[in-house]
Image 1 (cartoon, rainbow, N blue to C red):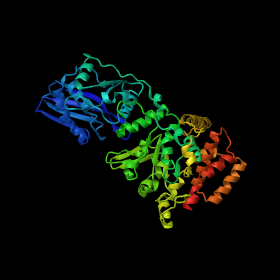
Image 2 (cartoon, rainbow, N blue to C red):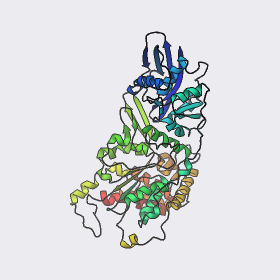
Image 3 (tube, rainbow, N blue to C red):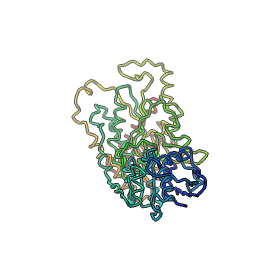
Image 4 (cartoon, rainbow, N blue to C red):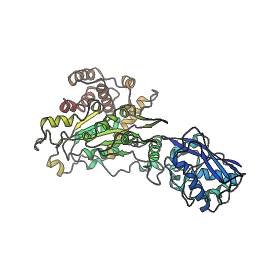
Length: 513
């Protein structure tokens, strides 16, 4: 008897439909699983057989052949277990033959007891199911809330195979999981706030500009000046996640297995702060079955690299292409996987190994050659990609001990940042560019939207020669100046905007010569 159930697989962060065909033949007992399965899929035979017995149903005494189509595409993971057993039940009559499985996508790993366990990438699979015309999606209870974020498809939370069989037979119907767009409620759920930062007025202004334009920023200063404190508070002043951004970011974390349990959609922008002992693969992603790295897990959020010179040169150099292209492509023998990685990079570093080079009161213990070697760990091309460079001086006692009456909470700064982003969005609307902030402007976008007035052009020309800027450095100063003008509510880039942008990119001359 031939039957077919439907499931979904993963390739990168994209799902694809899988037809689970089952044929039973009255012959010697056997169980064959074909369709290019990996080891985890092949092991499903024992899980399926034992789960069937422990669910209270007899396993068919016949020759069973299960094919996972399309047969030329590799199937990975344990998400096909439930669909395989469903197809066997349908062909053997446990699920009535007159019940149609068409339009029903079934995903989940089986435990030996017959319960359904959660799997990675359920959101991606549900999106693929909807796009391929499925109307019902059956997921483990652990993943059902996540899948319910997809509109236009009914999602059912399945605790075990007996409950699924009874639902399909019409004996005890399951209730669909409600689709509630509650992710926006958590957009202000930040425990860190800019009002806690004492002093560092210029640095806070630089962080506001970086947030308004999505610019990369490098913080340099001695220990204890607030570099990490500022970086950790950057997400609290970024604009709220849009629904499309939340879907994209959640898909990445779902595939990586880092999505918190019971979460439908991520409601806050991600903040990733990996240790400097990380490898290039853990940064950009990879593995035999490629998984997202830190650059993709920080998509639509912030990637913070503390003690930047301590990261291996291979790691920092691996950042160059993702910073430019905002996506990373991992090539393996069996295909290519592309992960999005549109993130803000925040780097923090001391001016030397002991941390006190140039300090007004604390003597530096490093030799001149040691300082140069330490600073030179940040390569020129990497430094060129940091739109804003700001030095944080040591705080005076008065700044630490007294309460700053003019300190602003993150909510107030966030309003200005959101207003500047909206100002930029309206300007770029209708241009045909998928650009969400000034840092993403390409050469044509800079030419179209970043034209300074005569006085600003003269100032920029003088700075170009005096600072020895590269073409990339010139473009980045224009982008930062465009963001400063947006914060000022000005369509025209004027001399004060360019002057502040130049000031925010002058440390490479001081430290790197």
